[in-house]
Amino acid sequence: MTINLDNQYDVILDAREDRCPMPLLKAKMALSKMAVGECLCVTTCDAGSLKDIPQYVALVGFSLLSTCEDNDVYTFVIQKS
Image (tube, rainbow, N blue to C red):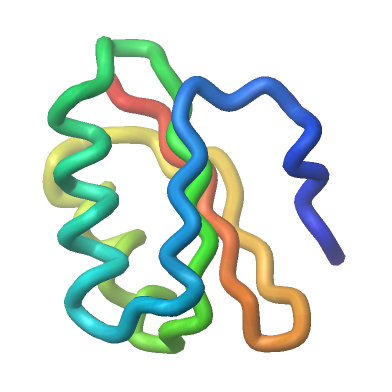
C-alpha cells in the first residue's frame, strides 16, 4: 500500500536518507514549529521508526493518522493536537 503524497499535508518530511535517531528528532523539530491541527507526513527507511515514532506520538498525545510500509519505506501521518 502506498500513501498518496499528493494529499494535502501541512509539512512533508523526507527522512529516507537518515538513520536512528534522526527521523524521530527531525519529526519532533517539525512538529514543534507546527500549529495545533496541522498534519505532518514523514517518510523514512529506518525500521527503528516503526517503534520510535508511534511511541513518541502517543507519549505527547498527538494523533497518528496512518502508518504505511511499502518496499522498506515507512510513512507516518501525524496530526498535532
